[in-house]
Structures are given as structure tokens and as C-alpha cells.
Length: 187
Figure (cartoon, rainbow, N blue to C red):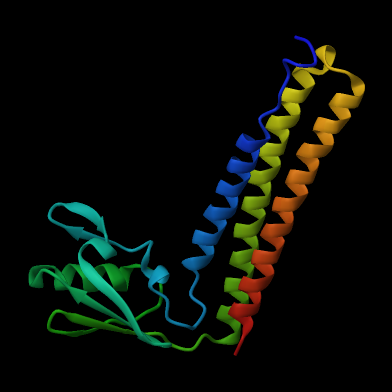
């Protein structure tokens, strides 16, 4: 392999790092912050028609107020299954059923629960950092395999590019964590 033939796919590394950041953001969206958000219900699945279905495939989800989510269940026969799924979800939300409409009042978070959620957000962020560092390691491994066929200057240039990309995405994770923890701890 000559210098011209080696080309590290930085776009692929960046795409994979962006994937880790996207996964983190969806994890953060499912954390309850005391404010109503339809994304809180993303992990909830309902036993419907003999299969586990996402909640948004059996009901319309609305957020009419900052502390209230409403679900309009499309099939009257599934109201009980939706209510059971919500009670079993571990979100700590008590559904109020009115026909095919289910109201989910979002209670205030106490200080202990806020700290617990902030710790959980930090764990999610650390998992994202590890995923980003694994992508960095993959890029550096590709670089090491080609080390004998590229110049020392090119090796250093590619290594610096990979590190700069890693630093950029670690910074994005840290910023996302900071914003989420602030949101969680607001009273």
C-alpha cells in the first residue's frame, strides 16, 4: 500500500460517533424530569393483538399541559392493556381512565428521585463516552495496521484527526449531560 492508497474513513467514524450521541439523547428523553413529555412513554409496550406493540401504535399521545399527558386509545378493547402497561412501566405514573381517554398526571419529583435520575443520566453519558472511545479505538487500529505503509507525518496527521473527532463528540456528550442534569434538578 502506498501513501495514496491509505484513506481512513473519517465519515464512517463520525457517523458511528453520531449514532452513540443519538442513542444517548433518546435515553435522556425517556428520563422523567417532572415535566410532561411524550418521549417518556417511548419505552412502554402494550400487549395488543397477541404481540408487544409500542404505545404510540395503539393510542394518540398528547401533552396538553406541562404536567399532564393524555392518551386517546383507538381500540376500546385495549384500554385495560394500556392501563396495565403504564402501571407496570416503572415510570411512577398513575393513569386515570375515562372511557378511551387515559390521563397521566405527572407528579413533582422529590429531591432524592431527582438525584437518582441525575446519576442515571451520568451513567447513560458514560456509556455513550465508552461507545465513542470504542469507535476511536477502531480508527486507531486501522491506522496501526497501515502504519508500515504510510509516512510518520501522515500517521500523526490521521491520529490527530481521529483524536479531534473523539474530543468533539465527548464534548457533545458532556454538554448534553450538563443540560439534562440541569433540567432534572430544576425545582
